[in-house]
Figure (cartoon, rainbow, N blue to C red):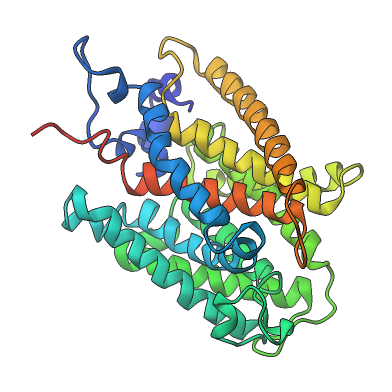
Length: 381
């Protein structure tokens, strides 16, 4: 949410190369209405509140729409997580293409269809990589052979691909691919590169053998997943809520990228190590997921909701406080709801992570970064 005051400073920010869409705030709005006669629902915070009418039904559908909470976790969590790199590609590399060629009435449907198809294809590929290849198991919460279930076997690979994609997209500002490629092929190459790095991490840290299955690695899959979620929390904090601050103040490109990646990954690992002294790994994943969801709501859904006259440091501080408060509310409420349900193969804490990271997170990104808040911010005829 910060950056208005920072953007007014000269030299360092203006001289930097173009940033991905998430860092260029005006790209989140089809129309920026001004003037006293403008409806409050076309301005913040009304725009964000009205947008929740589009976000919440999608989030509920992703949370329980596959036949209940546990079935949705077992089936939809892998599919959505594998689709997340493509969501990032469309939102932050392609900036809505191919939806931009169809107009606002059809853009969301085209982008969503592409995301769904990509999620299925990549989840099937993920099954193959971890040695659990079964097309039927992709859509079955209780396959005849549970060894072929996609949850949780494929989740570390899917999570790694998404976190790496965000490092390439937000933290590294599309570098180095944008030096040689245009946005469309560059986005595709970013997804391929993210997958290649994710498979490498799967082999080195989890001891897996591609297309054969897992082994005994340096890290437990749950620990690996929790560390990834903590890194994701830092990505959201620094590059969604704070728009790249403080790294955006570094003028030299390679120094900025190096510091940003080291700070984000190092901050996530350090957070995991410290909190894991008191918090169990599954709970830590859910807590970090709650922070991610809350950060997306505060930093994207309610972007620019804080008074413009506030200095940047105060805006960052308040946005962090609001995110922590919302994260606590989400975690407590979702955990209480999950505790009232019946569970078999999965645990309530796993569903909390699915709802925050996948259901809420994807719904906000679809509405704001891909749908451009349509039809709420649609230009008048």
